[in-house]
Length: 458
Length: 90
Ligand SMILES: Cc1cc2nc3c(=O)[nH]c(=O)nc-3n(C[C@H](O)[C@H](O)[C@H](O)COP(=O)(O)OP(=O)(O)OC[C@H]3O[C@@H](n4cnc5c(N)ncnc54)[C@H](O)[C@@H]3O)c2cc1C
Ligand code: FES
Figure 1 (cartoon, protein in one colour):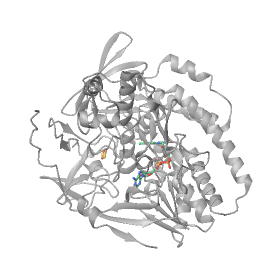
Figure 2: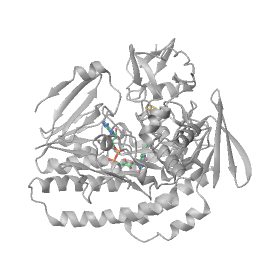
Figure 3: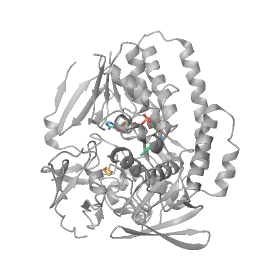
Figure 4: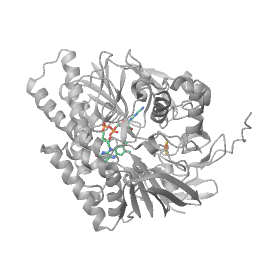
């Protein structure tokens, strides 16, 4: 059996290690230039000095990295870096592009571990140069040891604090955090508290980060709404409301973050079943507890299946690998499964707490008419609302009405906003609105590349 | 001449090993990478993880390269795309 694993974050790495231990041959793909995924990005090249900056959570990943490194010296593991997967078929053919050339290979099974992407936070001015996602700032810190100076972070979610604290450690403390969280969010979340080990770890981490922000004297303004950004020559004026009053603050870089959701490009292109999560307010692929999908021998793992964080992603990678082994006739110790399942349940509880603490807010989920929602084709929320009034019935028709979702990013940053707007206008639940039909190639490649692509056999 | 550098239009941009072209440009203070097709608004890197396509550049003659996913290499020639003609709205 040869298994393709797509995505070399904690989920993909853990799945690979579990399969290799059982003598299964694995090809592990990632479009980055090394293993690690979002959380352990560029960990291999980081000096110990940076433990202070990125924290022990980051360096914990070394354990997985070392195992992958050891396995890559055996014939069981083939690593393919800088390989962008642009197609996966139900017949288990995988196609990828690397350095301008494309290849295809037939596999016996596939585990998709493509992780999460940040939820779009469309506000006026979010397309201006110098306005980025908070995750982008983190990538700059991890890969280029560079943090933008005098920035303001806007939004909510654990990553907002993680990034702010890392910026402080890098000597580039942000000017302020404009947080969308309200007092009501805190009250709603308190009921979810319980005393499991993962919950305590998360709480300690959270409290630690809030203390770091306090000691560094970072201004935190809560319950803000209606953000608008005006930019001129690397100078941004951020206007916002708090209660009924208007405020403004200036910054050299603006970092937005409204949580993360599963990256569903490949699962949609494959035609897998998805459902709307009323908790995460996003689409999620439908799987069983092990990550099995509606297509046999195509499994999912990690945050690309359900957002549960890095530790859970590692577990779910192991679970998907174990399920695949069972399905293909390998003997698995039952203990392995029950222990992991019990742990997974605890991660669900933590996630529930985070979802209540940091929910996306209506004022950016249903943006004002003048706000651009489709960055690629420059379509505003007003144009989308107008198309719906004119009779546009769903996301796919909207493409014809407005070109919304037809640009290079293929709806990655407007898809959920479109679902929200349509659901709001026609009064149907978001889960019944449908989604853009995602087609392969899921990343633009030239026709020449597609025509000349080479088929690899084992 | 610095050791690790690439060309960006008429400038020399230094980079460290393992850095993307977009990261090296941002560190140098360059954040307007392209203009939009419809209204010619400036755009620059937004996600840095290959998802938003706002970092597209011309690299060694190849158009539409994602600056955030392209590892900086010694001596490569990077530039913005020539501006698109403003589309007349009909
Ligand atoms: C920008 C960002 C920053 C984050 N930072 C943190 C953090 O600091 N701490 C934390 O605890 N959590 C962080 N998270 C949450 C993160 O989702 C989880 O912690 C964890 O990384 C999830 O692991 P995973 O293996 O499921 O996915 P990831 O770690 O996201 O790994 C998925 C991998 O799949 C690859 N991939 C995706 N699509 C393709 C394709 N088509 N072709 C080839 N490769 C592909 C990606 O390059 C990526 O390396 C972050 C999330 C995001 C989006
Ligand atoms: S910055 Fe988003 S794709 Fe490069």
